[in-house]
Image 1 (cartoon, helix red, strand yellow):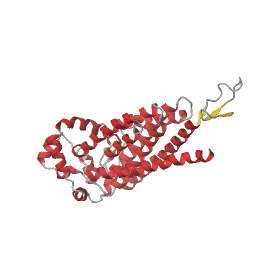
Image 2: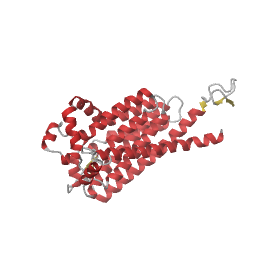
Image 3: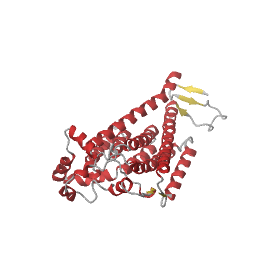
Image 4: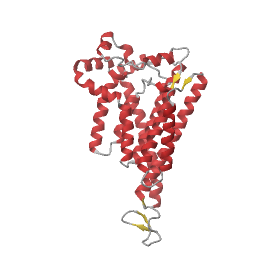
Length: 336
């Protein structure tokens, strides 16, 4: 076995005894595999932590669970994880393994955190709408005035905002698959790591800041001008778990009931970060993210501070992901 200074990897010497035995692996490929493995490992533990918190909340609150309709999804996620793990180290199968693994872990983490988001409402911390509104006003921002402006001058933009907001998670998961199949396994697994980490953090913060959102302060004429259920589509589940006496956790209808921080904004930032290294994809992701952020007020009923909180949560996890990546590369540099 000799070192190839041009390719930067190890090759077997020519000869009949070495041909076709072990595919060559460059130093760059090895580094990418190690970094992806670290992200996958840490993401798995984050998912385990989220599941543990969800179970502890459910047991402590004694909330009935209705698993109807999730059996197929559960088996699908388990199958994706199994196939991904089997193909993880097989040359020529890594891209498919990454696509299956990232989607499965992100979906499993999303289900666990979704359960946390609903169960935590039963802890009945004070509703924080007045506080969040005051934070907006301290920044000189009136969310309802922004929505009125959008209704008056932004009707041409509403179809785009609706499309971007309602499909934000489909766009993120589609991005995971595409970037995995393109072979950028570091960014695929970084996005998965940050997705689960930011969602788990968002749920932990939201325990202490339950809120029904900007629609609390909207006048009837504003609500009548918006599409049906805009700004308040999650209110039925919020009311069921915050005010109801006997809520039932239906895993097939887990809903977003978090105002602060905004995870829709985080999903937009995650998508931009995923595609940041190419000018064309970066501009496309920034354009989508900008339209989606505009939609968070009339669509999701978010306060502006919800978006700022989401940005800070995303930034913290993105910087942490850079530290994880640097921790993988350091041993390789030391050996070189």
